[in-house]
Image (cartoon, rainbow, N blue to C red; front, side, top):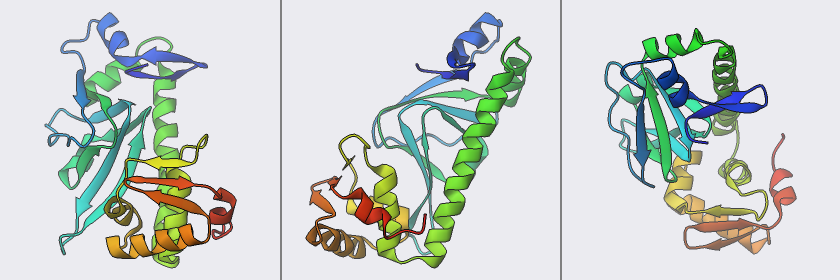
Length: 215
């Protein structure tokens, strides 16, 4: 449901709540096509909610290399301040809401919407744990181990497919050159762990990849 967060096992449509509260202006709704980048945040763009799809946050290093910082999957939030030093690009066709700080504070005063703050804290909390784990792997683990972790996280759990991703994008995620990623993927394929195709990887033996990790 676009513009919604969990509340008591159900959903709350944030935009509809803002409308019912008589909020003016209403939170802005944005639609991004796959691969489209979000414009730089304005002074009132305090909080973005990813209502559907996924948005990848990344930045260019001093050496000109792209480094992925986070992938925000719906339903989740990120602060507009992050766009001052990073770019946001839609991984899939995505829908977002943009709220000012004042709009968010107004919503929190609505009866029964205290869970909005809880949902926001949970969203940031889960991503903080993921980021800490990723930083650990970037610092202390080999490229094959980092790539195994990325594939396990990105795969569709029903069919094992990681779809629509290039070797360069995987390299941006794990901090490795595209050529290195290609070599490691072919090694995984030779061992029967995965199948590699154009912009697609199918994980056939997730337990074998997981065995490489100390999770």
